[in-house]
Length: 117
Image 1 (tube, rainbow, N blue to C red):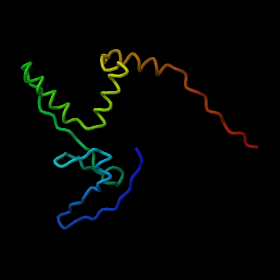
Image 2 (image 1 turned 120 degrees about the vertical axis):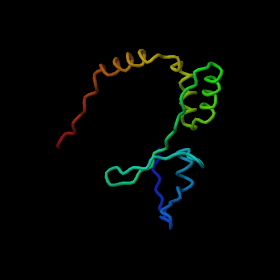
Image 3 (image 1 turned 90 degrees about the vertical axis):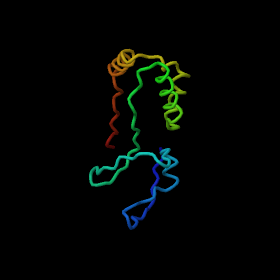
Image 4 (image 1 turned 180 degrees about the horizontal axis):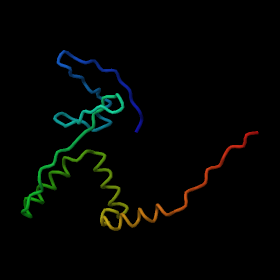
């Protein structure tokens, strides 16, 4: 993701407007929730999703997940599509953990030190 900087003004009621370009990059829309926090002396906003409990009935559960899929941000929909294309959408957590363990055991490439000549 490219770094975008914009100046914003703190208004009378301590409100700020998130510039359009930044909103579009993050997929932020009206009514979305943002978590505000201070990190290393900087104010950050992180988009958040609040989930209701998953319904117990099969029909209600299908409707619940259908709605979640419709409301998912674009980046997540793209991730799901790519996962389906690669066939990784059917992996279990155990399979994912096994693949991660194998990847972590691979020898890391050695760094080449520049000569001091």
